[in-house]
Amino acid sequence: MGKLILEVVTPARRVVKEEVDMVVAPGTEGMFGVLPGHMLFLSGIVPGELSYNSGSERTYLAVTNGFAEISNDRVSILVDAAEKAADIDVERARRAMQRAKERLSKQRGTEEIDFKRAEAALQRAMARIKVAEKAA
Amino acid sequence: MATLRDIQRKIAAVKKTRQITRAMNMVAAAKLRSTQGRMENFEPYAEKFAEVLGSLANRLDPEIHPLLVRRSSISRVELLHFTADRGLCGSFNTNSITKAEQWVKDQQARGVECALTLVGKKGRDYFRKRNFNITEAHTNIYGSVDISFVNKMTGAFIERFLREETDEVYMIYSRFVSMVKQEPTLVKLLPIEPPKVEEKAEEATDYLCEPSAEELLKDLLPKHISVQILNAFLQQETSEHAARMAAMDNASKNCSEMVDNLTLVYNKARQAAITAELMDIVGGAEALR
Image (cartoon, rainbow over all chains, first blue to last red; front, side):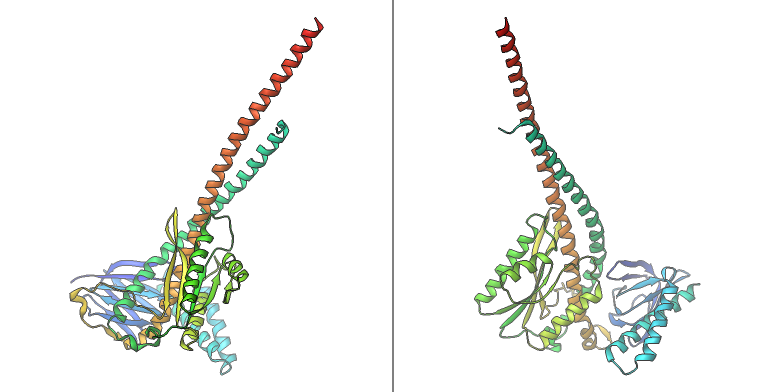
């Protein structure tokens, strides 16, 4: 069976460029898996965990919003931020989660944008913590 | 004729100037390395983004999204213009300002109103003094620009565009071509013209999109503008440091040349003085005999 070329890029740098066997990513409509020979596919990416297999090794990444393009066995993931499990600052993520939760409980209904922002921040923080715990 | 002491003083002054320009050169070099790194790291993202957007948008009808629709009559345009906050970088700012001013005049000649959004102190000072129509001016923000700032900027442009307060948006920034060449470049931001991709015959099949292509475009198009603006910021910053480095290098070289010339003049004057003194002594001794 062929291989997939996975590329994860953020505005700050290229996080991953590797040959892998399988990719599982958090799409807007739910998690999706990609194997070699996948058809042309374009999807939004929401904060969550992205994982890929190469050989028997499984690697986890925390990603935030963005999108993915799959064509000709190339998987390109473009997201605002992506971190490998080992690079995640768990303390910072926890603080961010705390802050977001506080804001959510206080501000419900006051201002729509702030509410959405806090919600998004909470999702990002939770994704990071989940990935970090999985690796530990 | 300048006295010996005058010349010496002048040499010392030029040497001090050289010290300053050398230091500025080194500072610019250090800053250049860091911004150039950021610019290069951003490149794969920008490229990939343009590729995906291009292949998606070219498959769809441009009427599908208001940001893609070209307006038939254009009466008001906006320009986002970048200059440095500081001078001492040769003709870097002047080049960019000249290009922008020429462009605005061309628009006005065709009866199109033009509003400016300025980044950088030099451009702001220039256009404000000449009473151009300025929407907004940002100064001293290089180095602290991140995606959220750019998103805010993009949001403002899109809002004005959708409210039909403006029909087209352009930007002019200095593209970093090489260490010795930075080029003021004009880019159209709105309405969005999807980047052209070369279609390979086998790739003409349809995408499977999740959610629908329309939904995806709603996210992608504003992001596309942000990516372009962020790219402009990074290029502009890198160009500025490269231009300053070159300018300061030149200045240091000119200082060295001046020191050489002045030293020559000094030595000549010193010799002339010695000769004159010797003549006096010889003349005096001759008279005593």
